[in-house]
Structure formats: C-alpha cells, structure tokens
Image 1 (cartoon, one colour):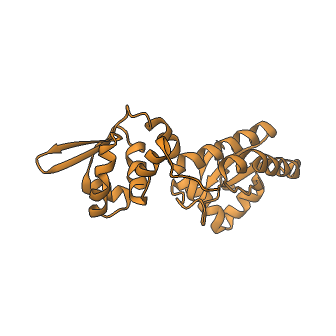
Image 2 (cartoon, one colour):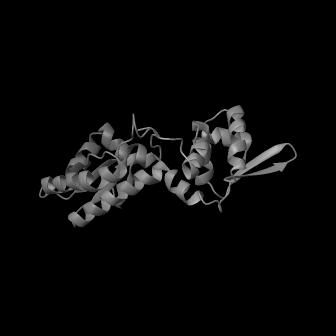
Image 3 (tube, rainbow, N blue to C red):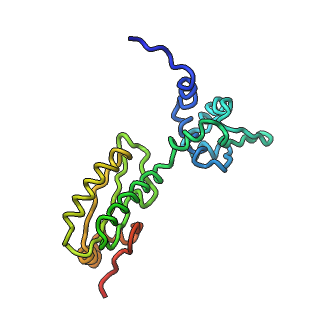
Length: 218
C-alpha cells in the first residue's frame, strides 16, 4: 500500500521543522518568548552558522511563527506568541534541564512519602549542574540521586520501592534512567571525612531536594 505526500498540518510542520537549524532556532525562541535576538546572537544560541540561520529564517518568518523587526540593516527575531503552534512547540521544546529536574523532584517526593525518617535527598551530576545532554537517543543523561537515611533499618525496603516507582512511573514517561544511591548518615559522613571524591562532589556541588546534607563530625 502506497501513501501519498503529507497534507495539511503535516506538510506545514514538515516545512517548519524540516532542518536541524530550524529546530534549534525555534527551540531558542520558544524557550525565550520575551526576548528578541540579533541574527548573529540567535545563531550562536542555536549553535548554528550565521549564514545557515539567515537562509532558514525566511520560511519561519513567512509562516508567521517568527516575527522579524528591522532597524536599518539589523534584523531582530522573536517568536510570535499568538501563533497557533506556539503552545504545542512549548511542550515540544521544553528545556531538558527542566524536564529532568521535574522527574527528579517526583522521585524525591515519592521517597519522602515512603520513608518519613528520610534525612536528605541530594541531586548530583549533570542534572544538578543544569547541563543535561541534548542527545536523548544515543547518549542520554542519567538522574543521579543520593538518599540519606537514618540507619540501615528499612534501607532495602526503600531501595526496592524506589526501583519499582522509577521503572513504573519515571522511565515510561520520561525515558530517563535513575539508579538510586542509598547511604546512612554515618556512611556518608565517614566517606566525607575520608575525602571520598564522589561524596566530596556531592557535598560541594549537590543540590538539596529534601533535608540538609550531613556535616562532618565534630
């Protein structure tokens, strides 16, 4: 069975999202709806060549999705917030750092509801730094979370509950991998005292999603 060429909205989307430069440029504009960009500034933000950005912008402006203002020879681009596609594009181009952080917050809330004695949840790695990889297919970022518990009691139960929740509620929705790290407060502090590299980074760079990071003895 042969299928004909896409028609209507499908063809329209094919035109708008037809190149990686268009996608990158739209991602910048949609995520910064109050800002206008000079052409060179927009190209830099999108990680594209100025010449290629210039070549692709005419179709985006022609579609009405992007506004063009001219000041002499200078071009200023901004997203047309009233365009019917903008709400859909906002969801499509949502900042990956925000998406990953949303998933991390959900895991944290589940952990807190599962263990009332949970002392702290620390977000580390690329998500904590706001530096999530854009390649969701070949090399996606992971969510790295440390859970600080009062003692060994209930450690296995919480770990199993987290794995079940992540596999059932996070992976299918976000496609994000998270392998929780559970440590007692004493284990964390002992490794901190030994200047363990992993724990030192967690202590200096980690983001507290719940509770407070344990401090050194004494």
